[in-house]
Length: 340
Image (cartoon, rainbow, N blue to C red; front, side, top):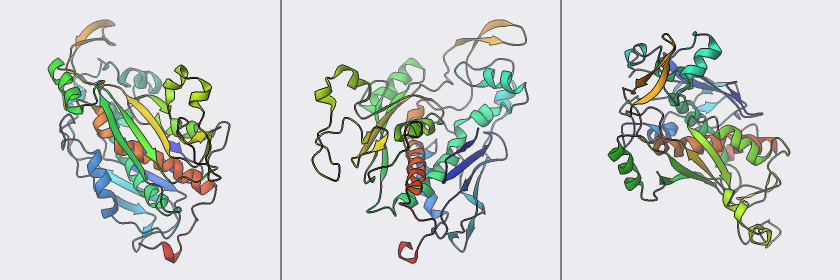
């Protein structure tokens, strides 16, 4: 469904070309200072049109608080934030209704919802809804900053199209007149020991669940990840150095037995190439029952991975905030000493 979390619980809603998209957060502690300015930096990082290889669609994306904020602080009641959709071109999708785009959810959504789905711009399946995830992540990051000395979360692009030189990777797609994928790494420092609820709510399990909610994610690996399959156990095991759990290496990526071990959390995700490519492809016209060639028109990202880091930080922060609330590392009400 569209709900995630146990104590810090979020619901995302809206469609790409609908009136708005947004998020509802239940369980946000009361008294957390919150203003529009808090959102601007991360919202700007998510936007297209400001960097090479991203869609030219631009939205102001100023958060509109509908509930849960009073006098500049969260109230403890459900917090609802809206983002208006103003820059849409729905006719681009009306013309191709019977011709589902390869790699998109058009065909499966049509089958699942019987044709009642909003198909414009991918509707509820669109990456547009990641602005709601980013907004929730801004609040989660503010909560993480109040744990110990803080728990910073940072994601970076490691490669595009197999190239560590990102410009070179983008140029490969430009030369091919196609789209391209990439790998993004996320790190979180300062996590306390003991987060995670094995078996099914282990740190990796919950993070993976959240990560795969981001459109275009094809894989996730923690620590050394798939490289561990080529190592000996004596190589992969991390030698414990002190009672704080610090280890000499971090092949585990900060998680052992599904529980945080006090070291840096490290994981990577694989982002697929943008499905909307100008290259001609084959698809099925469900009105004629015949295959036909198809080329996606409109405004699309050359490389989705360019916009993923801030979204990955957001879902990571959401998961960590929820786990920290479960272990009572975050109070349900902000005390005066936590004021900004």
